[in-house]
Image 1 (cartoon, rainbow, N blue to C red):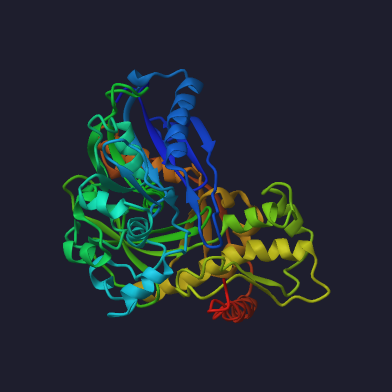
Image 2 (spheres, rainbow, N blue to C red):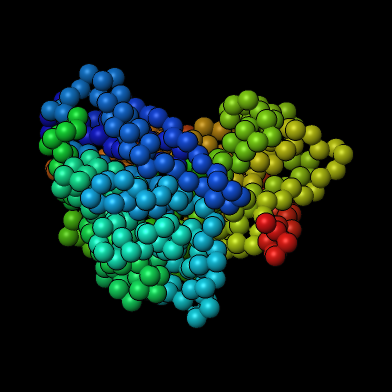
Length: 506
């Protein structure tokens, strides 16, 4: 393959939209990035403006191309990766969203979850869709929009409204919007809606009916690697095929070249997401994990995964910066945490929107426990970092129990992996090596890989594996007694966050 050809990945994330150009070695050539507004209309509600996201995506593409002095002729294919469960509903005739995008962290649909769980509990659909009923997933968010936005349900039933996670929204606009835009998603994103049969990879009309979601709203489900459509003639990348889509966590796993059963990665971003590849086998978790689609390449067999989703990781550092003003910038937390020897007995359970895996406690709320007069801002900073490591340890414990095969090393990626102190503590509290790859933008890289495979830019998974290179490894140096003591204290702290939400809590 000619060396002067490239693949571009659009990474539509929770806080920003990026476009990253990759070369044949999987190295970054250029990046365009724009943040979008986080909208908090009330406690527990999180929204984005879909129009802002689409405008930023286009601008990010322009930035990435111009920085590298490239044109569409240099780009062989486009990949898309995205914040998965974030829900957009729009009018197919006008291209206008009927409401803001409801973000994956949003908890307003708890009443809908409770209603649907009356008949069969929160695991009512789990054997079919791989997921418990929870506010996290898209299905409840679609229902909320149809139930609460004036005229939305009638328009949906008339066939005028479309639903998509942000990959579908970007794809539809990129391929023409009202002028013939492709309305599709991939298997990984579809597996996060509560509406797809995880084995047949098709929408379940009976479950969609329970949610009150017309099938006409739902995008076509396609493999993660394969041609979805061509970029519309009005766009910078006109006529370039869009040939890969993966939800962000699956994409990071793909970018880490964790293609085989037993391999795992943990991404440290807004939240924390561990994915453990179970190969072609659907493993139903007994320990609070999600069963999800890992990837599907063209007509090849589907690969599945177990996932542990942690709602709050990097966003806890943002909270320390923006809400408490304890630091001026996120990187400062490392220096502040290094000013003390330990957490001073303080533990932070960041259950801002309940606890996700492995607890699934929507009634929990954030707690800082173990406070004494001794605790200072350094201890708090340290407790913030440690909470991410503790939460990850809980999830890996669940993976080990479900798989029956103890994890021997953890591949990591995402913004927080730049924090040396956190990575060392993570290795200590797990008792296994933590490994960071040379290219940490694995989420975008995974989408680039999926897109490039579909058009022959890469020959197969073996070539992608060869691209992976280790950057740094952290080896545990904490004795097992101390590790167990700290985990006991963490678990005690977690229990203190339970049962907070009741009729008195507004």
